[in-house]
Length: 414
Image 1 (cartoon, rainbow, N blue to C red):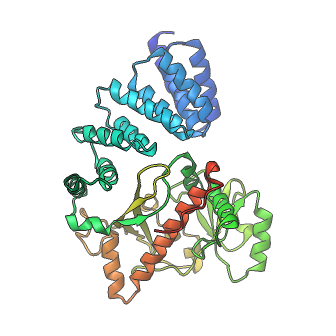
Image 2: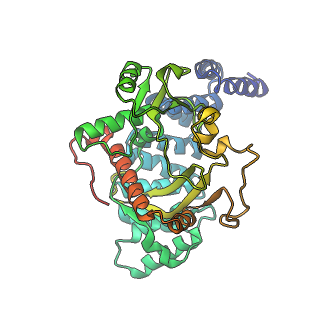
């Protein structure tokens, strides 16, 4: 097949992905068979299977691609990624290393992940060597500085510790005294099983599994049902708990707050397929009568590590809509779902050019909001303590969801 025709067919198949992934895969498979020796369709298929968590099939396709182009660093990087998703850290490290070396050590992402995989295997000296090499890479970013602090914090070379702490401080644009303010939690790192945290129904299942085996479900986790399988359970619970009149429905297939809405009866559910319904906390903490969205950031260094670092600050997005539950307000999703994506076209939205440049901005730092709340006699220490409890609980849930950790006790301290 001429290259122009091949590219056109590839583009046509990829254009189907959002609407009909199965049809896209069928077209890509035909294209792969009709044009052996070309990477486009093979790698597109590998990506789609990977997205569906079918990593074994994705691995077969990437290996096929490497046979065609053994010196393609991107393909070796993908090989490392898939091995990492399958939990084979040794092979993942090799895939990332091969990608890094093939790029003459210019492929920063590959080098960084290679170093993290070495650290994961306990090969600390090798990981430090990789880290030092990456320090010269012009594409380096703040993740390397976090990694360096983690790698060198246990060394006896105090000069090395200071060097990397100051490097980290420079990267995040803060002063050296911010380093002790990093919150330290004891837990495990993001491996494929942590994907449960980004999947509504799976997260509910993981929480249920964890609380049955380890500890009581915390009061800050709302009662949740997965539809359609738990629809009958939800209807029964709703009838038995009239003190919980408000519920939030969130479609499984959407993100960014899209498709979510508030109900006051199971009969109001628009589509009972693939969604979760949660008890809606109808009396939330408000800022000037409006709900807000809080983004906090954690850096988790490696699988089976004992620590994760949390930035003491964060980003707050305040809804441009005044909160209410009466009349049309109850049906206005923008009042209840505080995701920036839903408000970009809101005429009331006001965002300053720089964070904290304007006290009336709907976007501000978490530390700034804490000052505002303190001025209003709200106990910020209690809020921070609850946030730490929430983050620790979520991480323990993720750890316990790992199939190979069933015989180990989840971490309990931070």
